Length: 199
Image (tube, rainbow, N blue to C red; front, side, top):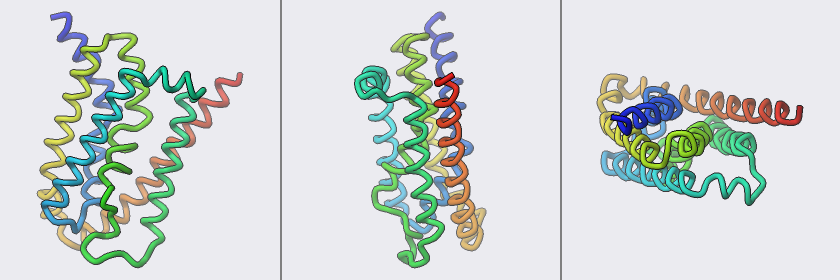
């Protein structure tokens, strides 16, 4: 029973940090126009990437940060900048390949796998929970969250059918704006944390 309590205590903060419901429209927008096989490949790519990055941070994240002299705030700013560049490129580049809406073949790695599914908030939560709740509950909790992401994202086509072609195109542009806003939020939080640490 104690292990179950620890798993639940680890799962909930990670679920909030991952935010599957918030990521779904972004995923739908980014993969709009792709074939079913391409969507499956990108989903598989994103989950493998998210899993590998999460495992690395669970086991050696704190050591990497300490060795490189990187703080969580630095990581937030860097992740935000990468996301902001990707969002701006999607908004400003007019000539896109028909049917793909400019989605990169490695979109499952960046930005879906990192920093959307596993971003600074998730990685920070993982490092904290390994210390406070233990390794096993944290591992089970992150795998449960990734399984939930897979289940939700696998049903993304149903949302596209509801939206229709014009609706999907509108969502695609709105998603780019949301990505830019998320990026600015990450950068802002990182900068605020840096200033607070100086005091």
